[in-house]
Image 1 (cartoon, rainbow, N blue to C red):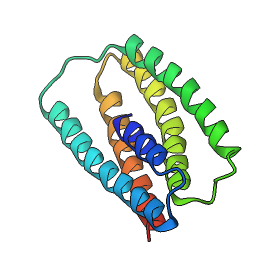
Image 2 (cartoon, one colour):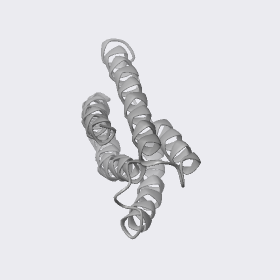
Image 3 (spheres, helix red, strand yellow):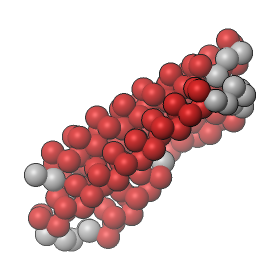
Image 4 (cartoon, rainbow, N blue to C red):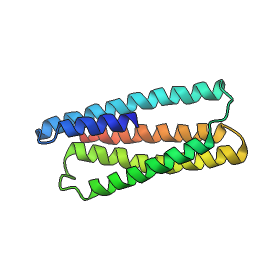
Length: 145
């Protein structure tokens, strides 16, 4: 969510900017996402090797559900935007589409954590989430070319 906030913030700063500037903004957002994904992979690995406590499945599910609603609304707004062809809007679309997929995955992970009484589903979904983030970042970096 931090990467999204950053991307949306810099996208708003670039409204009305040149095409070159919008591509640079998209590239910066992609680099930021890759950095966060690497940090996320490290955290998943740390928790896999160390912490054995179960995450609070109810918190995971509730927060992800409300985030899914917000992301879905934002995706709808972006899809109806007149600026869909601009690089910074395309970058935001990649972010938000990934978030919708990720929210569903996190909800499933929360259910599996509770059902299996294990933190492993959360860690597996976390790994998939950060792989999606890197894939999205690569797509965004291509927009900046």
